[in-house]
Every structure is written in C-alpha cells, then in structure tokens.
Length: 154
Image 1 (cartoon, rainbow, N blue to C red):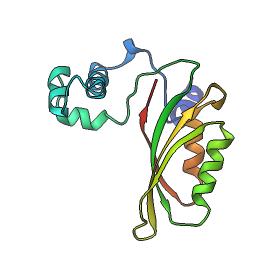
Image 2: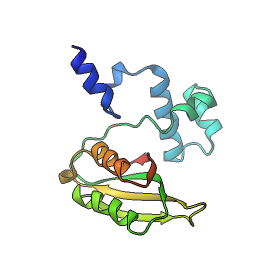
Image 3: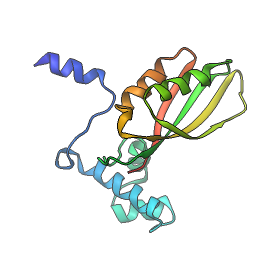
C-alpha cells in the first residue's frame, strides 16, 4: 500500500471525481467559470456569488481545473521563467513537438537579470499524451526555473 502512495506523491497532478473534492475547490471552479463566461465582471462579484473568500479564491485559482475529456484539441497556457540562453526556448519547443502538441502563441518578455518570462499556449491533440508529463519534462530542462499551467480549455 505504501508503494502506491509513494508513486502518487511523485505525481504533480491527479484526476479526482467531483464528489471527492472539498466544497471550497468546487466553489473556486464555479467562481472561475463565472469570470470566464462574462456573467460577472470582477473577482469580487464571482467570489460573492460562489460563496467563498477572496483569499480562498487566490489560494486555489491556479491549482484546480475542470477535466474535459474530449477528442478534439484543447488549449492550455503555461507561464515559465527561464534563463536567457540561446537555444533554451528551442529546447522547450522540441519537448512540445515530441508530445505532438501544436503551439498557438508565445510571448517572451525582455530578460531582466538574465531571466525571461515566457507565456506559451498550445493545442493538445489526442495524440499528445500526458500533458502533465510534458510540463514535467519542460521543468527538467537546464535553465528552466519555473513552469505553471495557468489555463486549460475544454
């Protein structure tokens, strides 16, 4: 039994059924849905309608997403901080290509103190495979300081 938990502890992402989630996480998803749909204009309106505190919303907003199991492509967006090193972005692009994802947009800031921020959106196709594994491989590249999924589409 402990082997199962040790293996699970090494994973960064889990798929959990709705009934197993604490109510606070479901309310964060609801607040995000309200904002994304345009039914509310501000975070304050969204959290009031969802019945959660602002701190709870900001604590979990980047960590909980609805799971959409569809065969069409779906987009995701990551933000990364990386060394300003020739070829590093090409290495990131190669990992994405290895997973058969299609890059939609890239925005790189002007490096400050040798570190650049990159926001990248890609379309995940059925052949892509495990997006979490792809992100983990990007994180392992030398010169990558930080990678976080900030958005997923269904």
